[in-house]
Image (cartoon, rainbow over all chains, first blue to last red; front, side):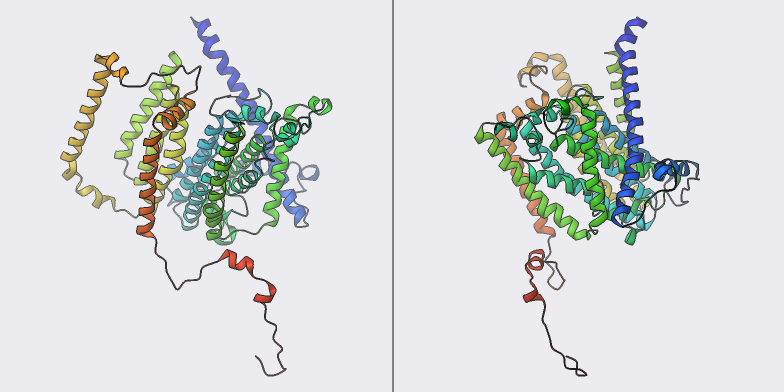
Length: 348
Length: 204
């Protein structure tokens, strides 16, 4: 009895826990260096040096920051709603890390290969707004509250166009599974023209407008500049994070960067062929898929940090106009056009 | 199956307990947060029955959109709870009546399917094998193939409701500055800049 119970439930559970821990640790280290890279890119654009004191070239800066956050005293404002105040960073960080369960890093390298993977990610990332709203409300102070309201409106608005972008990709793929989305990009426009399998087959080319919309909506969804109105430092100090300090603040920061990385990975999977090499020749095929995946994620992230460095912040009404009056009609039109093209050409 | 039973009771217990907290919490924001927990656990229950698409849609639509707006409104309102609670017993008879009606309907539906399972299953469509066709595709069949007109009519009703809400609340104020993006973009140096020669000491 014990033996069968262990082999049916115990062993798979242990394997799953081990996989999750591995992904978690790799992800956290990756986030530490993504943060460093973000600051370095930003500094380079502004002709500064960026972090360069802790470790060689400042490589250990993020870990020094981590120690600082952990050992400082968390301060809870006396007027704050204590339970919700502490729950908010926990909710954000849990949700931000939970989405990584369905991301395929390589062929069969995925913790949970579920049928509705893309919907799972969409659902969980639509919950991420709660961390922010709860943080803003529980702080019981003006700036966090304004930041939370802005953020809620912004994230709900841009989720709509992200949803339509996902629908277009789904129409082309015919499956909600993330691995299937990568497999579907092994042949496409390039192979139709008689070329060998290459980066021309990936979805970014036929769905180019959607690729751009997804990139910009991703910026807005993760509250990155130029859409960082929820934490606009010139008006709201730090928005919903004003009252947070030490470890809870670190959690909010961590979840923000995990969400940014998630959007980068999602762009990679949906539009840039996931783990597929750019050209299908043996020397590139020999490189492990995870390397291509990480390189593509880094490419997208480089785009994100460059945008942060040189695009000025949007005004709130401009942000809403872009979301509702430009992206929504455009993405809706693209859904219809894609559906018609697929049906008329017999590709669906 | 044992594991599924454990998760079923976990989700069901948390759902019922937080549903109770929704109506008993003092702070309305806490109520909404507990409501979100109820939705979340309901999604978990859907997952256990294999309706993964419904579970995710529940998360996206109810938690991701509807409850956000709920929370939005409740946070912005400044409600006096003592005043709100003063007349609560007045509504008790209506509440009990509604509860009884819902309970009676549930008993009729569940009792019907327990007593005569054949009759109950004959009015529903046969359930396709989940291994052959995923439940996402089956839901698509039902909505967009078998009941497409009903679906379209429901969409029209929602559209009319939306237009009605916009018409009722939209006010065009005349004397405010609005940004006209196309006019801004269409500006050229010829139309935007006027070169004036000013004589010294005279001004314009």
